[in-house]
Amino acid sequence: MKTIIEDMTTGIQAAGIARAGKILRNGGLVAFPTETVYGLGANALDEKAAAKIYAAKGRPSDNPLIVHIAETEALEEIVVQVPEAARQLARAFWPGPLTMIFRKNDRVPYGTTGGLDTVAVRMPDHEIAREMIRAGGGYIAAPSANTSGRPSPTTAAHVADDLWGRIDMIIDGGSVGIGLESTIVDLSGETPVILRPGYINQEMLQSVIGTVEMDKGLIAADSSVRPKAPGMKYKHYAPKAELVIIEGKAGTVVDKINKLIAEGEKKGEMIGVIGTDETRDAYRGGIVKSIGSIHEELTISQHLYGILREFDELAVTKIYSEAFDTPKMGQAIMNRLIKAAGHQIWKV
Image (cartoon, rainbow, N blue to C red; front, top):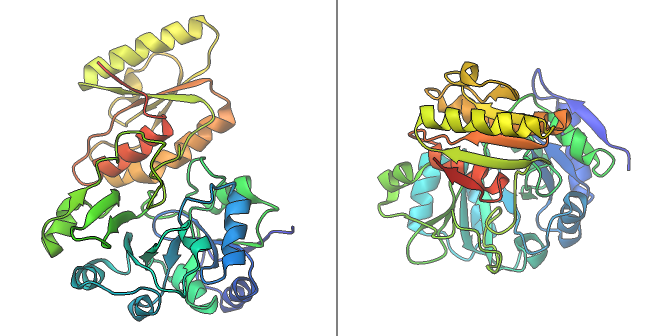
């Protein structure tokens, strides 16, 4: 398959959007920027088109896709009921990095929902994305535009590295703003439940609708559970090298990682280290990359996946990362890091 790139780094190009819309309406695949990560889009109401997403990514077929819409009114056409809590959250956070789960109606095929009777829906806060959704028919299924299990793409170059020749088009909209996938909250039951943390945290949700619970399986690994939302069951975001998180007081963590660097380099290993602007100069040896300042958590979310991909290119054999306990997005950042590490956390 020939993959074409549409450059929209300087703004929306109407002709390019029209070409993307035509591809989507004809059952093809288009990667596009959102405020979170790049998504891989197909017509969400076309089961055959959705199947192409799974094939291109190598994604397990029971891992549900998120349906992206461009107008709130479009939600009514694909779900059984829109709870009042969902209306309140939509007014507060749409367009934005919030995905909500509803009981689906018959318009949404099971091939899009991973065989579930529920559907995940969000409205991205990115003009290119919303224009493409409109051009493509209004309902675009779109997981992250990467090979399944790899770090999610935050640039068009990341998409090309993984999916070149497997998809029809990549819309290059430059680097994304947040760098982590949307918050997912399940509204299909009696009590809203967060299934994936993100930029919009529990406190923000509760300020709008009251009690919101965290899913008990967010931190623990459980391969026996059928995933109700993307990222719940399978290993995600993982670099090629083994990744281990070192958690504890800052000085103790640095000392431990320095000891591990020395031990690894004696064995001939190439060690990668993920630190911060505040700690990077304290490491002795290894390839040290700063994820940003611990005081500016958006820099951490923006750089996480890119750093993991950089270590892939450098062919490091092992990566040690600090833990990042930041006030707003710390839970989301650690959720992604823990999954990338296969739940390997060493406390010191």
